[in-house]
Amino acid sequence: MSEKSSSSGSDEDVEPESGQHVELGGVLSKWTNYIHGWQDRWVVLKNNTLSYYKSEDEREYGCRGSLCLSKAVITPHEFDECRFDISVNDSVWYLRAEDPEHRLQWIESIELHKAESGYGSETSLRRHGSMLSLTSAASALSATSTSSFKKGHRLREKLAEMETFRDILCRQVDTLQKYFDSCADVVSKDEFQRDRVEEDEEDFPTTARPDGEHNHNNNGSKEKLFPPASPKSTNGIDFKGEAITFKATTAGILSTLSHCIELMVKREDSWQKRVDKELEKRRRVEDAYKSAMNELKKKSHYGGPDYEEGPNSLINEDEFFDAVEAALDRQDKIEEQCQSEKVRIPRLTPVPPGDVYSTIGTHRFATKVEEMVQNHMTYSLQDMGGDANWQLVIEEGEMKVYRREVEENGIVLDPLKATHSVKGVTGHEVCHYFWDTAVRMDWETTIENFNVVETLSDNAVIVYQTHKRVWPASQRDVLYLSAIRKILATNENDPDTWLVCNFSVDHDNALPTNRCVRAKINVAMICQTLVSPPEGDKEISRDNILCKITYVANVNPGGWAPASVLRAVAKREYPKFLKRFTSYVQEKTAGKPILF
Image 1: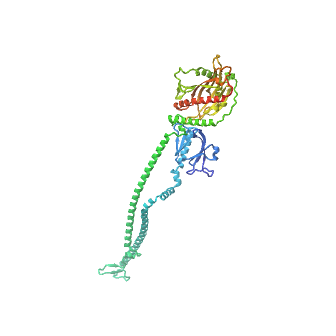
Image 2: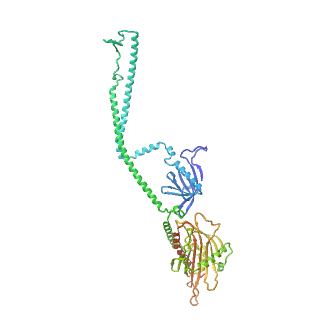
Image 3: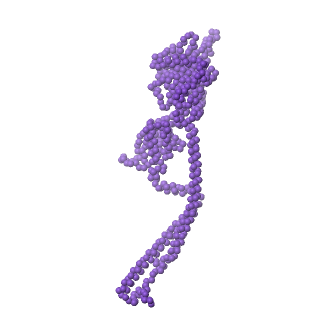
């Protein structure tokens, strides 16, 4: 996982500002769909956004998808130590890191981006400041309905009256302040003059003053020559009138405040009812959302990795069976359509002489091949009539399919055995087309990829093949040695017998991968040719030959598919396989010389 600063600037080391982040990039496995499964993608974390590209080299072509992390929920997987899921509403990304340490690094980085860049975080509040609240308030005010405006009209009138009263009161306070200041000046001046007169009388006692400041009344007391100023005489201010007006103004303010409080209480009750209604609506919506999410979790989320085959799969056995059956039905319809449109290309596959197929061989697996051939010739041809362990599960005309139920560590290992009789073909022809890799894809419809890993001899090859996936089951692959052998007769009455055996081996050029579950197989097809004598001197024709086929299969599918599903699929697919293959052989050999 690489890191680099996402902010531009000088080359000096500076502390990044709030809201700036380090860009993170690296390879994560992303679940694409149930066909392609996990695919490596280049994932970039930048500016509170998680984006992914097909590869690092294709970044210039644009991202293939992105998620805003503001409301994202990051969930580490409970069982998979390398996996974590990121969900935003109904969009979910399933991601896997290469190891638990890288998963922890990614989760911590994503949570850090989410915390520092998310709406309502400390960084965003510091970045937006108080203007966010002012803008929100203005938006809320502009979004009010007409009815709300009418209800608040009286309150705004009262608030306007309060503004008017405030202006009047301020002017009256100024006026009264001037009056009080003037009164204080007059009192100070009068006291000063009174002090001077008293000092003069002490120095010059007289009965009368020439300046006329004091007069003696009949009682011999002094009378002040500067009478106190009247209220109106100070700057022409009517103190009594101003006091009355001030009292009226304050009474008006108190009355208006009382009205405002009353209106606000009514408005508060009204808004409280609205809030209660909105809260009730929100509760109902949240309950509905939770209910819908619970229902969604109960249903199989087709395509999601949690619902595919695995030890902790969320899909139950019935849903697993239904999904597999539906997928097989779709494949059958597609195959029918392809068969109707397909024009078979004639393939010239030279057949070596029979003695080539009868040799044991000298390759490194020769001993193992001989052991498998002898075991199948000894046990596979035994009659099952007296063995109660074998159960007849299908009987259609000449074809019978038997099964013996075997489980080991919870894995179904049921051996299957089928017998069939096909007219007009020989055992050599049936085994040749079953073994020949050049025509394998002509009749085998369950294979997705197929290649020969190594050719051991003219009659033995090592083959690797992947089978088409049937969701929710995991995709299977098989690596096996395929050998064809002509069985030498021990006496002249034994029928002409051919055998093809396929059994699992290991090879350095086809190691197991995480994408597929490696299945183990031990399969044999034994074909015996029965010839009825022609009438008279006629030559033997295809009407005189009959091929008796014995097909045995021991398969360990691996994985975690339910036993009931595996048995149901085997019961359904094996008869179809035999019919499809034998019909192909009859079509290929029709009109051609008989190959014994």
